[in-house]
Amino acid sequence: MDKQITGISSMATRQVLAELVAEYERRFGQAVTIESVAGVAALRRVQDGEPFDIVVLAADAIDRLAAAGRIDPGSRVDVARSGVAIAVAAGTPQPAIGTEAAVRDAVLAARSIGYSTGPSGVHLSRLFERWGIAEAMAPRIVQAPPGVPVGALVARGEVELGFQQLSELMHLPGIEVIGSLPPEIQFITLFSAAVCTESEQHEVAQDFLTFVTSSNADSVKHRHGMEPGEVR
Image: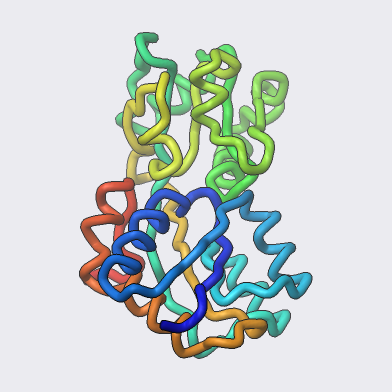
């Protein structure tokens, strides 16, 4: 058996990767350890040359690593896609969110809004600008610190309405996911992976990426609120 494969990812893919790692190890006997941290921290650590075999991040972050020469461009694969969902504290009223207008009304009616520093948070910020409510909402917006799930703020009652990728909300206790953003304002984040240039076992690392992008991994992704990276 080759030595352990090491990797780093953002928190959004933590649970799906944990299950896929366990399945890969069971099937092939190859040890894999993936550290999941805030996306900005993961990006920085790979940019700084920390020795990982693989990295799994939002596609735009992988683009930046490719431009910096920190990944093998030929190894890149698309792992999963994830949309933005909305959550409230368990047992509290659930606003209508079926249309863009309904979501805007729910946002304006909420005493506080939570979103992340990641792609979903950037999307919400731009959406509020487009709606012309960014200034009015500013005092009521709570941005979750990097690595802290928005759902945790919702569960503690720190925010009334929380927005984050479904994969990061669906398994948290103390909250209820009331649905995804309607199609007209939905934002899908594509998560990609690649072998890092610092890796000393490119072939083994690439084998793992082949597994996590195979049809064998689809059911795991669905269980964690994600879709395969490539439409099949």
